Length: 419
Image (cartoon, rainbow, N blue to C red):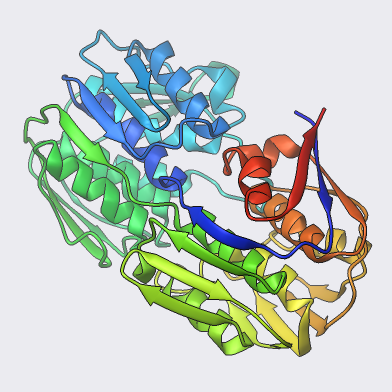
């Protein structure tokens, strides 16, 4: 897809309208296959590559997809549907795994290749398989490295997740909505996107209780009917722009935000010396003067989001003193530290820990987006650097940020997308 070229020394200012959540859209789009009636979703970031791929997968399975406007899509899964997830998407997009639960719930069978995605460390789907197996699903190795799941009669059960995996929690929720009897998920993920999926299922006629806590109870067997639903805003996009405002000494008003989804970020930015003002669904982030060093440890919600860790590492390079950062969710998610060092950052890494000394002047360089959020972090660092920064791998960033060059430029940045 090309590369982003970022001119440094630009201060961000203005109003930024946050898109609908990518991480909510993907499982909710998958969940529409449980509904044998049209479903209209608004707030869908339709220009994201991952969302486009999910919609294409649905069409390959036999779902009718109709897009209208910039963020509205109607999905009609009345069928007939195929249980075979297309390899062309599953091998490149990890979110394809979200279709396992609902397709099993709808058809009693699914075939999928092992999913791809960002290279941020091992993310095996064993948690998904183990949790779904508790609902009377039998998994087998199929030809060509495929996984075949069969469960002609899903039965509710109590399942415990060894880790509070967002994807596994959501997959079981969707399958359990179509199972006979009740299902309880212990040690469930608590992320806002899990809550949004539960609210979508309930809006369609399901019965999911306790989402947002570590124990979710799903009453199965309810007939899901069609209807309309609006997705939550994208907290990671909002957080990315908030960090960019602080890093550039800017002043940005974020609109269409659920502030409580990002409480850990607001606290860290305030601790570092940025000003954060919350007023209803808007948050103003500004920074003037020297930023202070801090310590940060990622963790499952309500801990600090791992998806914002690369952005915070970039911000720490411009803070006065020694900052420390520990990544507890993914073991290979500090590869962007090397790219930041190419720009002059003083960052030392050891396994999952980084030590950052600052502030150090950043210089424009040619760097690579090693994953989606790392690419965004390098672009943000480029805004504060001297000279021009070229971020290779624009397709990585486009998976999670739509119209990114144009929207940053509207805040005063100079960002171009080149072939």
